[in-house]
Image 1 (tube, chains in turn red, cyan):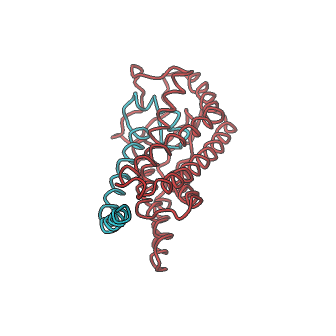
Image 2 (cartoon, rainbow over the protein chains, first blue to last red):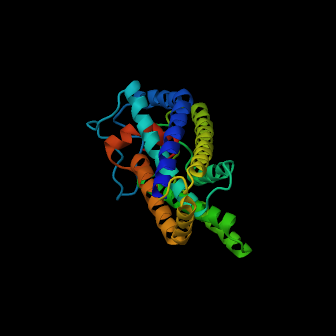
Image 3 (spheres, each protein chain N blue to C red):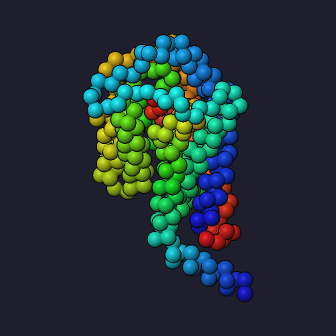
Length: 235
Length: 63
């Protein structure tokens, strides 16, 4: 069983990460690089993030820290990042499959859609995809809201899909809505260095790339998980 | 012989399922979430720089 989860997650993560890297390289990364030209043109003394809360540390990047050089190094390290993230998501999917095995490979598409809704759509409703150089609220607060939103969306969807009682389904919808009622942390003043058209293009590129990534993740994982049935690979 | 052993396996895998499957599912999910957290949410500067484009593309909070 553990071998089945590991194999499903490993191969799914690998394939989905390659697809993600391909889509990113042609579509998303050029937009990020373009936005960074505005970020780098901005005089470095003025930090775009000024946190008003006294407890929050000012946002600075350590110039000493290792950074991949533009070109193959950057593509390679992004591929590595994609791989880790993709295997992570695939592990969650494969883990859930041991509880609710997909009845068909096509059902993987539904799992993929649910993953997209949980980890992309719901968080981006409050915190849209950002290009470098966009002013946003405190990082830690946004991360907490993001994780909380993903968790509540996952629980909400699970209740809506798997519970049989209507009351539980209503509860699922309520849990789904909670983070959006609370609202995502927002900066006092919205501003960005990149032109709005570029940001709009980036939002579309990011959403579509993530839809493709999640559909691939769901489809490949369901296919591999069903192929490697327990009888074939005893736990 | 092969029939018996395969039946034995099926029975053992169905009886052990619930607890075992639940444990496996939870462990896999925690491990998966840790991987995503490490690449996407870690505050270590070098990790941030390496996975920078992944974070922006996946709409994780980055800067």
